[in-house]
Length: 98
Image (cartoon, rainbow, N blue to C red; front, side, top):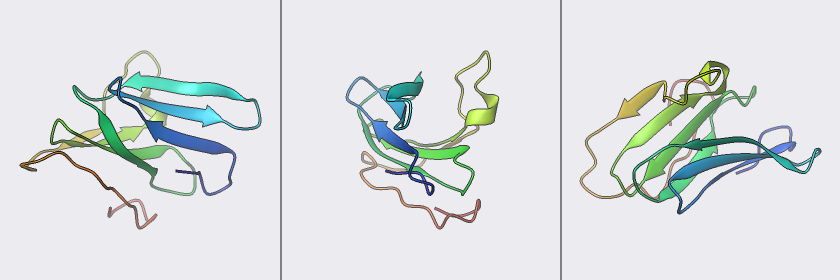
């Protein structure tokens, strides 16, 4: 998914990671091992691009705050309860609901 300003793309991968690509610099600006299985879906949450949601075949949804990545790659939140892998996440872009 593209960021609201169109400068970045966030992507999930089969290596259990989330990638954020800086399109202007033509490089990966962030990579984190996010799940224990394929990352099926990702999206930016807000206008700032700091919050990212991810869903995976490990049945988890995770919330990532890029401001907290200095020195540790841990999610800001983990939402459990799905019985199957998560295949779609979308945001209302209000910082509260997805």
